[in-house]
Length: 443
Figure 1 (tube, rainbow, N blue to C red):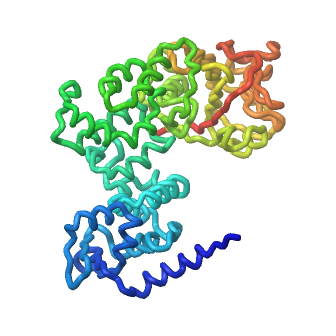
Figure 2 (figure 1 turned 45 degrees about the vertical axis):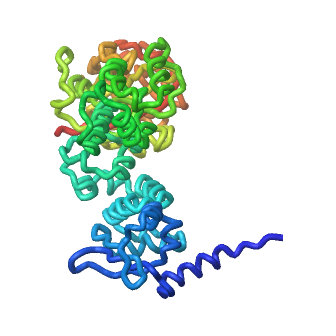
Figure 3 (figure 1 turned 180 degrees about the vertical axis):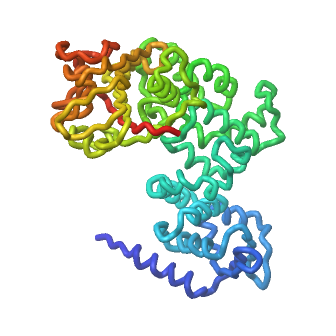
């Protein structure tokens, strides 16, 4: 027969913390007018924190009247009490803290090397503080911008880890890698920049520095040219089997190796396309079909209204999210291929049961989304069926369904009698891995 009184033990440890009985550690937390004395017990600190374990083992801690003295000016008394409560009884309620305080707490916990609490805070920030992380980068990370700032190299490792775990960084993967390398060098300024001249000690130091971040880099989504030029020179810091697998992936014709992470949503929240595609869409909207905007100068913003995998893959879900929103572009990923297709509606979707005429709508196709040269675009001939708004269908371009979603499938050019758009290589009938709708707004 077994018994479990662990909760009672936790309560007793909490009482021990509250009543300061037989404490032998004095901690001065905070600085200036916000400094307070906090009491604790060395045996508990030693067991629960690698920082304190190392400090006590080195026997370098100052003692007064038989008590260990610690000064931690960079951690506020309020946050240190929260940490101490977790050390004693494993309890913490992050929901009661502001987002900025949670991040300060993460920095403090990382310094004290309380690994369990580090993981808890990282998970909380990732799941529950998404908007705060996205909208307040300056307050959180104390940088002008995140990766592009000269202050990026000052980020704490725990915060950098949170960033690299995110799917919605508006950067190409190779830019993320380049910045990570800069960050690693900044942690060890004495190490020379020429990787070919590193000795064994320098290799070991840099390998330890980058080790925790390697699983977070999506190497398979770095082009072969960039991988060889910018990643491969640092192969001594990267697991050999990973290097071999990525090289094999780029040598493979079908690119069907097992890839555990999808590409990041590089721009405007899309998981299908990147900023280069948005630049091309902008060019087509302006009818600049022979000279495209660049990634830096296109004149539109694209606001994600709907994603089938996120919001529901039904006609009703589409209309709930997209109706009465003027000017939208539809992006569809064709199943079992690298093809993306879609269309631009300069008017708006609704449930009127009517058709609409315009010369500015278009259909498009990228036979291979990674090959921008495979793009084709075709504009409406201006007839009354340019845009069709029916409750039984989702996006519908052309009266003869030049492109249409209904009854759980996509069709194209099923009835040439009402043909509105030229053919651009959209399959006659196909399934989609996912599709997205963006509202187009002039900057």
